[in-house]
Length: 93
Image 1 (tube, rainbow, N blue to C red):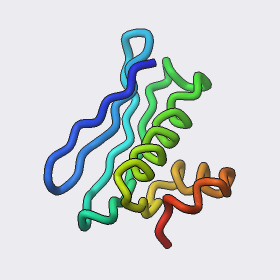
Image 2: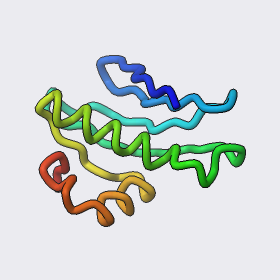
Image 3: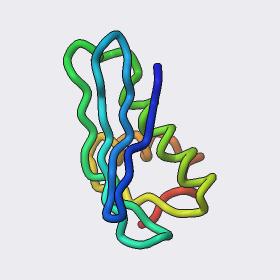
Image 4: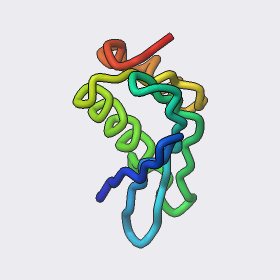
């Protein structure tokens, strides 16, 4: 699975490519220290293949490396964060 980040000053998305399909996790940047993950979308063809989880983990790793935090507004991301207490250091709120 290939994951890339597309970013503009106000936000962007993480895109996972697998088997000719793309899943995405979108975010808004509120400051240099905080993003809000607001949506995760995975096409039916990729469901059950860990794409959403991989996108969430990639965002967490990116936040840790960049020294900023994530506010989980997206229901999927929020549920993943609840399942992964070890992510707490990268989360806001």
